[in-house]
Image 1 (tube, one colour):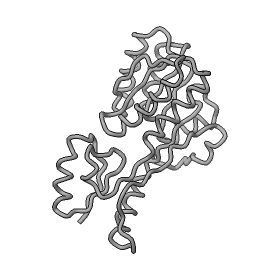
Image 2 (spheres, rainbow, N blue to C red):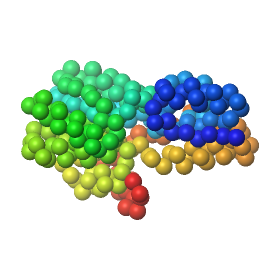
Image 3 (tube, rainbow, N blue to C red):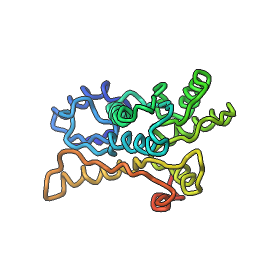
Image 4 (tube, rainbow, N blue to C red):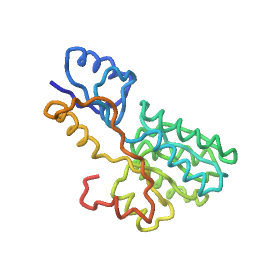
Length: 229
């Protein structure tokens, strides 16, 4: 009757999902959107343009509009493009800031470690790192520590993992903030999908969860030590 799906990649899954929808199956897409929105009935995700925008605005303010940045992208998906495009729009408005490089770390700490090693070899001066995921930040921090680099002021990641939120709470200078992208949204998607069948109003359209900037001042509100993530 229904399919709730979080696509690994957007493009390869769009046509298969559309074929299922055409057979009358109710489709809820979570997080990584399909390339054709007609292939879904409902879509639940974080604010991906906001995710990139919030990170870039923090950097622009913290760096006073000047600095060299490297980016670790995620997997090639719709949301990866949305995040990077929004990030770059803010950077363009700050001509003193420059993106040195942007490569895919695939939201994976091991891949991110390798990408960051490449950046550290290639660039003698990096002010800040933006990586789209807390798990990638683990690999990035490991690469920076192993290289003994002191020029990098901090790393901005996101998702809201308990380890990164704890670093923000504790005032870790390398992780001053985190951008929220709640992993529990899959639960929200399931609730909305069930509501379509049992509620009074049909469920359709897009449900977006805010991209909140987590700082030392509000981190306690987002720290859940018993969370599996």
